[in-house]
Length: 378
Ligand code: GLA
Image (tube, rainbow, N blue to C red; front, side, top):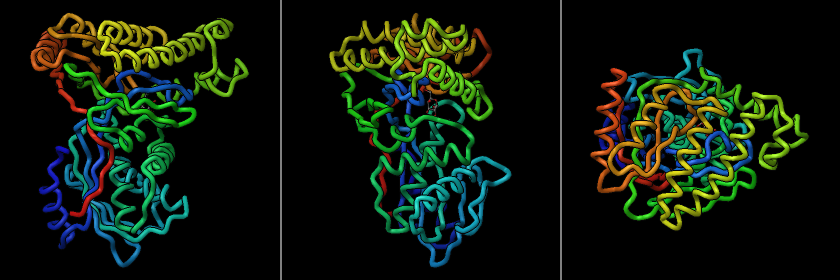
């Protein structure tokens, strides 16, 4: 894991005046395919990536929480029985939200001192918030002597996101941060919550390109899209769009039909991509990525001109296998499958042409698939 945990332990000691007891570290994620399907009980295929958030922690004898963001150089201080939303928002509400979710499931927590640092790009659609939540949950549980299965932690963190960050997200990001595996993608059936590790084929690199058009899901139409999907399912008399068929959807009014068509077709693409990944069938993966992007752009309307440009440039760059918008959309990043030997040249080519066309400094990240949240002695 890449985060500089030695530096984090030093920052903890400087802030709190003694050494931390545990360090928990959780990864961001990039979604290969299956966008806006998780909250429709559908399929997703994310990868936990080697950009992480780490939390150094020690238990306290009382019920106080003294939290410290090393990267923001900011602090928070409150009592466990008063973990209300912070009016200033930001990282403090993730600390408070995770504590609330743990307490709300009747877990007995001790007070904690903690320091946080990370290198998951924020506001880029790489789930820095899920990484932060899982690292916090892992740290706070370790400090309180609580052992929770990783998937339960993920579900608690999703509740924290709903209640404290105001994003009605699905389960993909928290599951990826909790259950990702080195060298593998994580297939999730978001209805049964069953998961399957899918080995990434040799010779392929995952290159994430950040458009540097920042967004926060809470300020985008993300929640509206979720409502539209729920409305489409209701209109069809279904619990979710998971079981909708292509022909059923035709009866929906125009906007709802386009949203639902994306979800239904995207679920089929995830299953096809899982098989293609196992077979190392790059041609099929490229086609599925292209179809997914077009569907998100035209049907789900979750793309932006900058993201569309990044996909267009990627498709003509050296080593390209497939490119598409990844994550919630409305800005953020593209995910690209690239021949491994060309990964660097590919990233450089796309970023420099993007700069020429938009004046924006995009950034390429060549990512490795890593394990989900880990806790160790500091
Ligand atoms: C965000 C949410 C996820 C998922 C994606 C879109 O990342 O947090 O739950 O809905 O958007 O696929």
